[in-house]
Length: 52
Image (cartoon, rainbow, N blue to C red; front, side, top):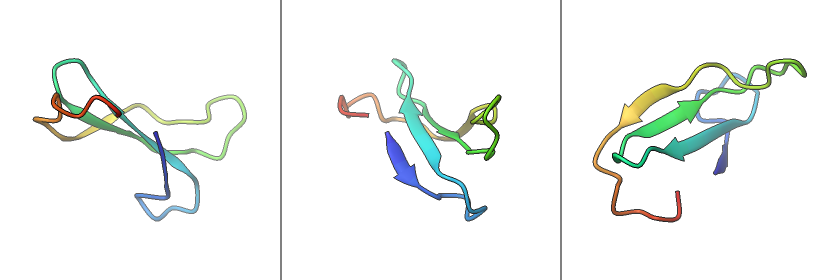
């Protein structure tokens, strides 16, 4: 899910949820070759939300 700029670095970020309920942020890099950085876990317990 694209959510805008969560980390305030000027690039668009993504959110994702693992099947186990961990919430991950993929920070945008602004690069064409590697558009997103490695995921960072920012929460847990989101397994009840099936739209993420």
